[in-house]
Image 1 (cartoon, one colour):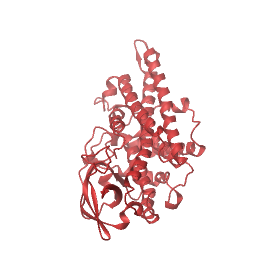
Image 2 (cartoon, rainbow, N blue to C red):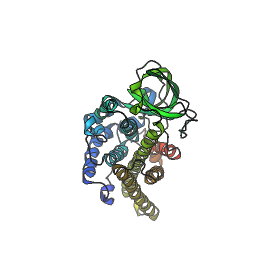
Image 3 (cartoon, helix red, strand yellow):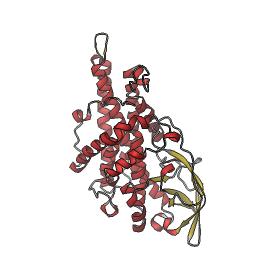
Image 4 (cartoon, helix red, strand yellow):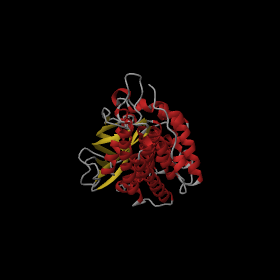
Length: 395
């Protein structure tokens, strides 16, 4: 299955990074090479796959693990790289992965930012048991807040998943929805009601009573498997309670989801940049009515607008990430601004790319010669950006 020819990277010509530290800029170069070697060759297979048939892109997940990419967000104490600006580095990594595959960027985001980051609120023993395998990439992590009747509403009144303490154990019952990575996860960090407050539990998916449903079939992001998860009288030991204390679940969840906004913003920039680069290459080579499409003022003005917006979107997520690295647990309003702006831009730029390519923009593949459609998968993937923008606390 041939892939669209890689276009020239316009960001290298147009964008001048005056925000990211030198260590982060060096990491961007490293991740770009890893993504080109591991993700790009199979990105089209993932984008056009069927979640229930093709399943989890284990080859790519393991390839990123071998390259040490899951170590980027974490401290050396749990097997991470111990970077000075780990959030900024993680966001940059997500952008570079999303440039080739929104699915892989989402898998990385959920594994590292959601499941991985929330474990940093755990005890030292919990971090060694669960976070170290996340950094090594030997176990896939998942994070569960959303429920069928409670998506963005994470109040104790809305959450139906309940954990009741009986002596030295907790009994967990409930159902979660849209849980990314759950079909292959070794553990799911789960938000549950404990009395009149919320707590988080690290749930081993091999425990009796844990059931993960069939993967959902989605318009885009088909390599990011999501599914419902049921908990039926799951017996948890006391060391499953995140941090060893009750009642801190909502704060841990919100802090993690704020960080997740930065990751979604970075993914939006990666998708927008890919669509932009493909469009520039097409406008510069395609002729109509005796001249290049790029000679038309409509496209000149539009692409100038989009280049400016990509610049702004990238700066926004970098600013939010740097604030988080500086110790601000809730770097608002920049995190929300970056998520909204980057997500919307991904949709707008992908739509423009489809228009620029005409029929080929709408096509997945031409039957006559196997020519792949270069941008339709990006357009499908941006549908998730719309959902994420409208519901900022979905898992």
